[in-house]
Length: 461
Image (cartoon, rainbow, N blue to C red; front, top):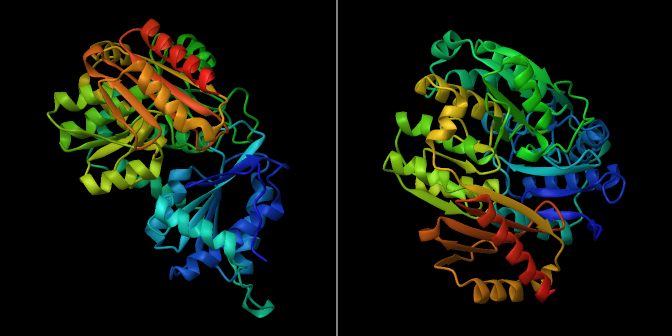
């Protein structure tokens, strides 16, 4: 019989996620992995399926289940162990594998886990392929192989070293100049998969390191999402150590947030802006980002006389648009940087190297760099709201707020360019909430916009 997914499992284009034990069990993970392996074969994909995970305590259990599910339908498996998500995706592309599976819930708390689905391109499934897989999952009972056709599972311990060397070889980086700067860097990897790899990369870039949360044991000491509100500890480490910059990495190491040399969190949006400046200085071209990313990226792009194209939220949506636009850099305002010269995947180690290159290029501190850019306040809130009422909510928001421009490609984005303000309202793909994101020239304006939007939603609900 086809696999029946629990009602409280969150399903999106990137995969499935839920709380460990309910609804996420080894049996469910094995079933989804088996279906994905059979689906890849049905799609004509050949070669092994690569499996990696972040550091969560449930990761080993779920990884074993995933490997078993893949083997049961005849898929050879290559296990990468604990690696950054971008390392797995790059390995899939390089190996010309059939696909990959990441056991990671990214920024979610430790009691969550997830299974992210990767195509043979080394990218998450786009909406079209995800739709085909979801239909396969709902309708097909994956055929299992006989006892004498169960393929082997092998291990690859060199995925990160290959990834690291590809970063260090990028023409956008002057590795010798970064090493000569001998930057003092504070790093918080929240006990996620990024700890060992960030130490490895930053030491090779000649940095003096001051660290916290580097043990990859999955016992997150704080909310693992690298938002400014969660980085007080890193700010204190910067001040106590005299570091020139603080780098905060999320549990699966695809997002980077910054703290300045005074210990003040700069937020996640500045990551893409600074990384883009490094890339555009060397290879001008289009920039692609999502609808919820700060206008500061547009300001940077304007200084290089290149266009910015907006795409729906979601890594694969941005990556696909980057391919279509031949973009030279892009990403998301959550600290995710995508560099096509490396791969079409958000990559925190890459982002860290580009931000350090920015400091070398400009010969200034991170706080001076931040002060040079236009200042905006961005406010992000989550509210419970019935998704079936969202269409009415969007109508009410547009009627009440009267925008100069609107975009309905991903929820509703209302913008007032003359005021330097915008509001984006959309259902989350990773949590059972509706996200309200607003940006304006002052914190009071952005907060007022979110508060007004929330009040409108409350009236509709």
